[in-house]
Image (spheres, rainbow, N blue to C red):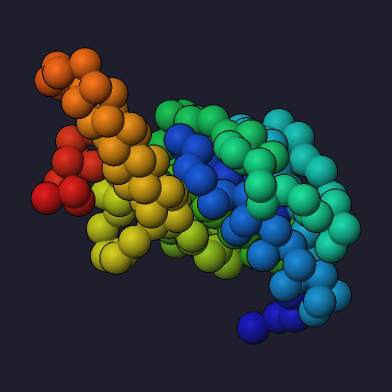
Length: 181
């Protein structure tokens, strides 16, 4: 395998707590190995539009505490089209990207797999989904925070309901219900 000199990184699909921590970890690990990192804005849309920022060891300092993702995110349904993936692959090659790190859910990781299969672009997928619905993974980035937030909110509501002698109905995502059971 050829030497990796420059990688790209995207956060794609819905955002999940922990995406910034993953961006930071990838960037700092790459920097320690003298690998340049390009962060594309809005997931696959950033690759298609060549909308990116150079990430460095110091530029990712202080991002772990921020919610969402500093790279922003988007869903790009047209990425299902082979011609659109070919355009993305062409852009990555023009920018000298030797590999791509994709932080996202099932659709984003499927897109990464197809970029590899169709265009031989090395990819690493980091599962990120508050739903924890990504096949063949135990726990995705974002699940633990989602669950803790739901449990914390229910504890607070329970105190309020008790104080007012009332019952509250709380609706959470179906996936969260499955995990809480």
